[in-house]
Image (tube, rainbow, N blue to C red; front, side, top):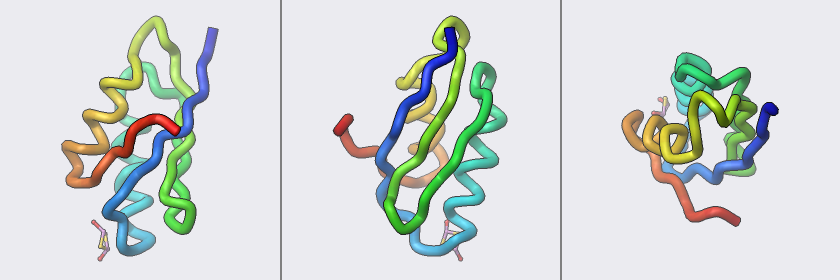
Length: 72
Ligand code: 9UX
């Protein structure tokens, strides 16, 4: 069963930031697709919970240099 999560992201300052994060997330094993909204400071990630989880997804965003807020 595929899951979809909304993950808030802080620290994005230009459109290329959003694209960097999208590309990074899509490279994560288990991530089907990822969309990052710069204006709304959030991402929507569709993933297979049997393969990856929110900890991995958040960790990837942080490793790229951005912040991840708590779940809303
Ligand atoms: Mo834009 Mo973001 O020049 O890491 S790519 S600020």
